[in-house]
Amino acid sequence: MAAEPGAPRVLNVNVGVLGHIDSGKTALARALSTTGSTAAFDRAPQSRARGITLDLGFSCLRTALPPQLGPGPGELQFTLVDCPGHASLIRTIIGGAQIIDLMMLVIDVTKGMQTQSAECLVIGQIACQKMVVVLNKIDLLPEGKRQSAIEKMTKKMQKTLENTKFCGCPIVAVAAKPGGPEAPESENPLGVSELIEVTKKVKSMQMFHTPVTYAMQGDRVGICVTQFDPKLLERGLICTPESLHTIYAAIISLKKIQYFRGALQTKAKFHITVGHETVMGRVMFFSPAPADFNEEIKENAFDFEKDYLYQEEYLSKDSNPSEENKENDQAGEVQLPRHQWALLEFEKPVTCPKLCLVIGSKLDTDIHANTCRLAFHGVLLQGMEDKNYTETFLPKLKVYKLKHKEGQVERVMDDYSVIGRSLFKKETNIQIFVGLKVKLSTGEDGIIEGGFGQSGKFKIRIPDGLKPDTKMLLTVASKKKSKAGKGDTTKEDESSKNDSAQPVTISLLFKRYVFDTQKKMIQS
Image 1 (cartoon, rainbow, N blue to C red):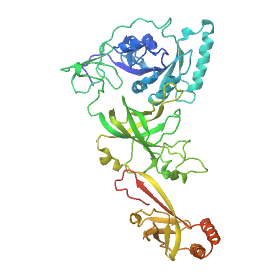
Image 2: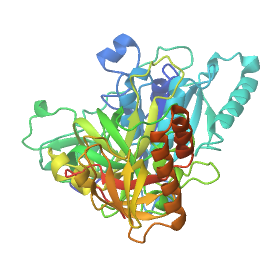
Image 3: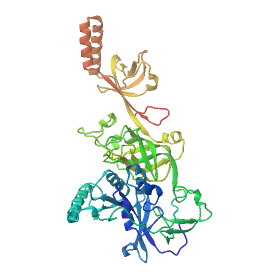
Image 4: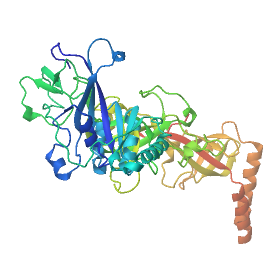
């Protein structure tokens, strides 16, 4: 959006202030800021009553624009986004993280990493590329031991970060509010309309009391809109027309968060954060076909022409290999695909931009448990805007399950046909399987021709004929059964043992697309 020209150039950088509750985030934001907003420094009555941050707070620090960032006069503005630290407010924290360019992880130097510190670190790895660690409350350290304690905590943090993208990031020690929690209020800022649903002409804009000519994603601005009743405004999203869509389901690319304990199961429900909303959603995981596990795929795109393999759970090094994947495993190792996806089905529709960040969490986990509640993150590749997406959209998604059935050859009819059993139940309609290919354990290929009798038996045609060895094996087995039927119980038992030692098995393999309403069986 743009307003009237004439204001100085301002380059804005959003800095998220994240950390465990009571680590001093709000005090740090107040100490750094030159201007606060109406939502800064816990001014809300609820925050004052409880003594904690309950919502995102915004303030700014302005400095001269460095010459390397562009010619001419201007200002570099750091918008500080003060995020809550309480575990129950993780939705707000995730929402704030999605608009930040740089993260400040605030650590109480007397306590080190705590549960929500770790969750904020995980969020930072997903949401931004740069981080500064702030060791706060150094005034609480005994003066004579202060420097050594800071150095010790600095080394601990370096060790914590060495396997993350933030390895080697700056670590700064401060005392944001020396002398205790009491601190004077900063100057009052202007009122800001953050988000809007209806389209209106913008008459003018201000960013922390300074006129600006434009605003972009992540900026905090006060907007003067003509012929608009501010009482009609509630929290929502402001955007360029048609840049957002409301969706009922989505396809995402995703990766599991390494600190999350346990498997990610298909059909499980997660708290799904999309844009600035968090809703419950059910997931279905899928991957490329095993032969394509190592194929490189175009980033931030989804190919509806390809076939995808249904997975009971997200595949990781700790996964139990499914029957479909075992044949692709080598030397007993689980082969993992380069890319995996999920279908998310939301309990209520969400409004979000395309290709936005998606985070799946288990927020119903005990907040006192020392465990990461963030389960996976990804990118929204395709949203489904039709409420009837299960009928209009999902049939286009070619996710299949591999089906494997096994039976046995009962007897030979002639050189080109056998009778099979134990592949189907008595009540199965064998007619729907007619024409499907099967394979004998002795190597012959066959085709199901139809049922045989009423007990679930069936006839198989062998186009290239039975091998002599196979025919002999089946003939001997058939004679043993016949003799056992005329002899005593001991002979029958021995015959059964010999017969079961080397049965000729029948394998039927086919795939069925999950969203195919006709439930057709497909063979390559």
